[in-house]
Image (cartoon, rainbow, N blue to C red; front, side, top):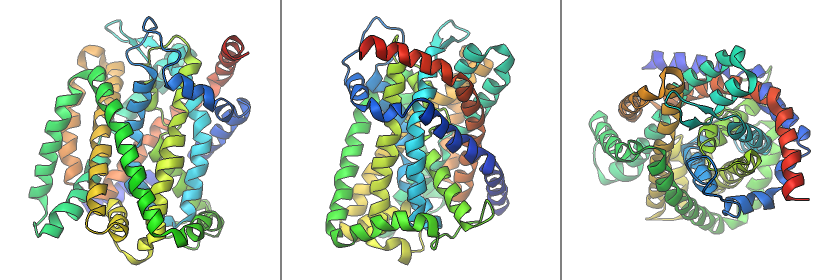
Length: 456
């Protein structure tokens, strides 16, 4: 296991180097400037689209705008927001959250472009069914000569879509919050039982396809965000006197890096802190990674810009709201400086500290909802990748591998799981960002047509 940890750690560090940060952040800034800060200028219109003002049942696609965003959010509003933020604070202190915010602001522009392209250049699978996603907009938008990028994305997506991190952290949460305090001995046996229960729950939903997935998560996602929001506000109220102090530390520590405990990169500790924040931000909101394009590409619309506008709300909800709430709940309790636990256990300790008796159980309920909903969405992404590579008639085989991987995630270490997924997210980001940057002018041409037609 130690050897596996070392290999995955080295692979992840190699992938998340300076070139990828430039591609994600530099590319995102370019898209933000190219669009003349469009994500922030049309937030009101994006909300109108999300509320169904422009829904047309005769438009091509499988699910409506709200279901598409819920499906995408169910895979991003999850353990990245609870355990991922805790990992960032453990390694980088409050300053890591600033760079996570930077990734979200830039990510809104990236999401707009990638998910507009997912609808602009939808392709057909081997069964003649309309499909959207990075692999399709590469082939349809750039042509067959760029297909190698589509293949790279799809192969990386087969691993990147595995639920091992979410399952790992849900298992850790159940052990830490529910079993160990009640004197139940935890280990391989209890972990396997948790994994088997998750396999059964997941199988019932994912074998029903995108329709059942989208309907399930469109009910689950809003409810779990509201419950989590209320819980964290309670923690902030209990610790209100130190909230301003820690909120300001997010900004001051972003450049001082006094609390950074990770490996120095880019020639220094500050560079390591920046990479840590961007890396955890990408895991949280997936902007530039490309998985969400497969959900948004299934949206029922004939106007690609609308889906891009809806998709750009993802990082705002996911990172600017949910991740910030998690970060503040950990910081204001001071638990990040006194506890030796990591990941989801650190967040649980913060909840227990501020909401005695029930706080950690409320978090466990949120974690269960976050994790299980993400299990549904990521399975859909993996089947889409296999469908592109091998043909739609074989895509269901991915679900069997996916279900087995749930047992793997429940019984393996946190570091191995998070480094494995980080590495393949990086591999997915390369073709996604290259293709998006090349096709960005076509998105802007479509945007000018759309806004002239509907908003002028």
